[in-house]
Image 1 (tube, rainbow, N blue to C red):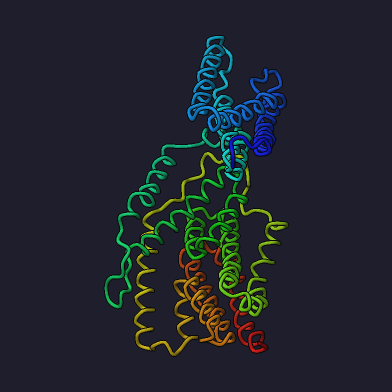
Image 2: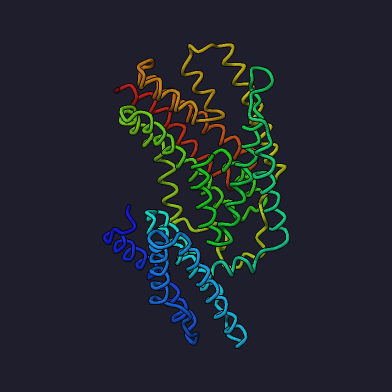
Length: 428
């Protein structure tokens, strides 16, 4: 890229100006339609000019002087500061948010000129979303309590302070105890509950808990099952929504397995996907029915000021200890059996983790050291074992209403896994 290249400069001006116009369009819409009597501080034209100013300053910094972009940014900052101060003295809304968005728009123009269009696009879209979420964020912050702040600090300590300090190495008999892995389960269980809580605050009860279930299925469906089961015990009126989250997580988990298999071997994926479809059907059909026609277990009102924070570190610690004991039991069994019983090892591994056994069997199939039929059966048995474990967690920690729904769907899922293992796999 040459500073004197006119084609690059024209392209940068076009892209940068367009991104600035999008940000300005949101600002103009917000002030004209949400605040009918407000005077537009900066709209589509102004933000477009700010972005073009950033592109031109970046070009001049390459062709005239290296500090031209910095000088342009400083000049814009001084001008905006003086302008906003004058509005503040007049008693009007100073518009600090619009001013900050203008500074980001200027920097976005610089990113475009320096060839980072994707970064600039992501930044511009993020700014637009953040600006458009003003009403929801205001409602959310008005409902924050001291308990919320304390819980957020606890989660920050669990994730950002303790986790990096925990040693990541195998310890104890058979190398079964890895403090980092066990503490990661504390983070997952706490995180699922925490994300679900804030999602409920922003999106409402059913939508927020459902989103937590989907995200939990991508991270850890077992941790999601524990967190939501415990929540249903503490707030029985939310049992049906918590059951929805658990079963969404379990359904997403099956297709997460498919993604991992496909990442290793597309041939293996083409062989296993009919079986995974059969296994996921019970949860998928039930979740679709609940989302479309099932209603909610409790009134899904917008007043969630009394919705208690579900972050319970004691429960997370209990689960981590149980997780560590299961790992030790699996390690002892594997050491006794050796590596000959692939299906037995798959079932045992599925008790604690699906990712490792899925990737291992797929890789063995790709290298030709394991037949695809055996690998598929091993993965299905791991899913079956994992489903049973989650059913036990739901039974031990969940409310009676949650147990009824989860047992019914996971029971059919387990039968589907057995049927797929017996009838579908044998055809390959």
